[in-house]
Amino acid sequence: MTSLDDLRILAARLLGGQAETTLCGVRLRQFDDPGAPMRHLAELTFGLLLQGRKRTVAAGRAFDYGPGDSMLVSLALPVVGQVTQASPDAPYLMLGWALDPAAVAGLILEAGLDEQPDAAQALGVHAAGPELVDAFARLLALAERPADATILRPLLEKEILWRLLRSPHGALLRQIGLADSRLARVSRAIHWLRSHFAEPVRIEQLEAVSGMSAATLFRHFKAFTSMSPLQYQKQIRLLEARTRIAAGARDVARVAYEVGYESPSQFAREYARLFGHPPRADVRRPGGRSDPRGHRFDNGSALPILS
Image 1 (cartoon, rainbow, N blue to C red):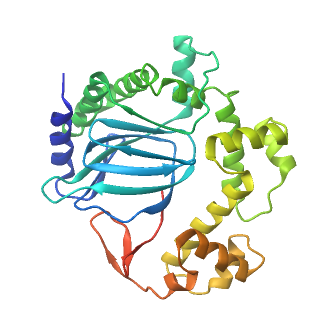
Image 2: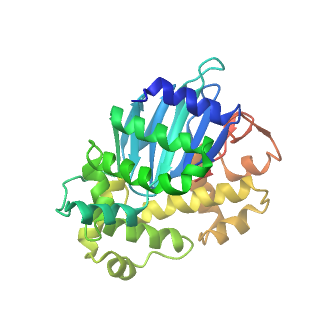
């Protein structure tokens, strides 16, 4: 059975000195030094930390994790992440794998695991078991055996999902696959908010897409995200605005209107409250240098990544 050290060596070899690559559906990233805290939107994903240490703050909680620890994110969730331990000799090395709710649902049905789990959270951190580490090693190894990948990759991905369902992440993962779970209903509301972030929040629309009354939706939304739907939308708007400014937008007022603000001054206040400086401070940062993580830095500040 492949050990965590063996998987780390394989991942480093496949990266070949790159900061990031995706092979057989597995995303590999490495950073050579610690960084400043960065706000971003974490997607529905599973991550396994192979080397280094990281802190993630999400839904009102802080999670510190190291080699062999794994994180499962069940919602599109605004988080603050910070690599806390990394060096050129021992870089931070993370493996990421996107989760497919349809695949989770199919396996739950096949295994008869359709009872409603009790997991009122959006994110969990647990040690990865040896069987899960071994399955990811076999999946990654297919990158060096492409002739086998067509047949073996779907089987290994199914095995990984099964290992996750049988792990401490299982209750949270099952909520992803159950259409009527509280998390799935909140996810539908979040999808609407992300798709219509520049529009006013319509409570009736959120009730319709989630299948919950406003009071029930607000209660579960707050439990999973530590925010109300309106607060969530505000963070999505501001992250999108900063991404546009980072991409070269120079007219702050126009960006404010594009992301749904009616008042540029209110936009500037809320932007400064979230990021620690006004939007024009980012506009004044043309270009900038890239660090080994692929993020942009100017005057020591990190720009957000929506991924």
